[in-house]
Structure formats: structure tokens, C-alpha cells
Length: 137
Image (cartoon, rainbow, N blue to C red; front, side, top):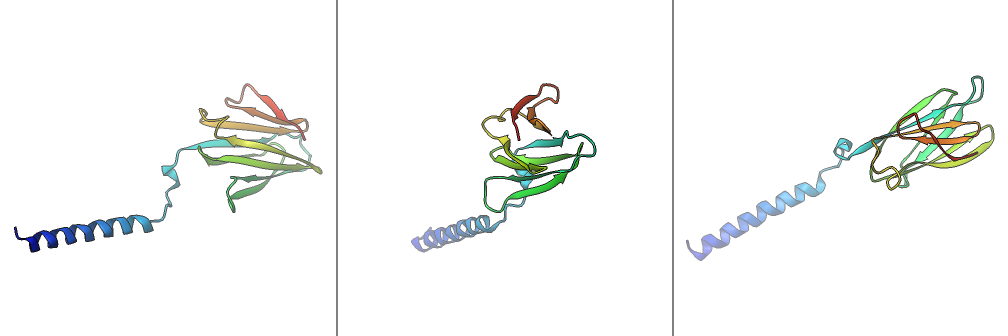
């Protein structure tokens, strides 16, 4: 092959490689299922007839939060990425408290994380049988 053919071959390969890299850069990441996730369930264990609890959870990244009202007995399940930390602020009858619903260090080996909020405080479980009181209002 002549030198001119080698130059043309190298330019062709460089163009293909550049197009491949450029295409990879502009592809949106819209497949959340590609990231390993954990289910975090928050249940309000307040007596019937009590007011709802308001909960706002933040992924500790700007503009990534979810808020909801849960009546007594209500449950909300969140799907969270395993590399995240979810901090939640709860309000009930003028009382306020903060709890970490999912912590990548504390909950690293768990597939599911369960919370119950009741008049005395916040309880964490990984199996819905053994509950540990984590904090109060």
C-alpha cells in the first residue's frame, strides 16, 4: 500500500472513532433501571382519626425531592438508588423531625428498608419484625 492509502485509512478510522465518541456523549441517561435500587417503605402508625403526617424526602441533590401526606395507616414506597442518601423531614401536629430514610453506608447490604412513624418516634426495620427506635419528634 502506498503512503497515500495509509493516510486515507487512518483518516477514515479517526472519523469513525470521533463519530462514535460524539454519539456516546449526547445520549441521554434515561434508563433508571440500569442503576441498582432499594425499596424504602414509610408507614404512618398513628391512631385512627389523627391528622396526616407530611413527609418530604430529599436525595441530597438539588431539585430531587418528593413530598407526600400520609394518613394514619398509610404507606409510601420509594425506589432509591443504592448510592444515594435520602433525608426526610416529617411534620405531624406541629411537631417536626428529620430522619435518614436510606443511607448508603448503614443500609448497604439491604434490599428493603422499612420505617414506621408513630406518636413516640421513628422506627427502622429490614424485615418488618425487628424494629429499632431511631429518633423521636
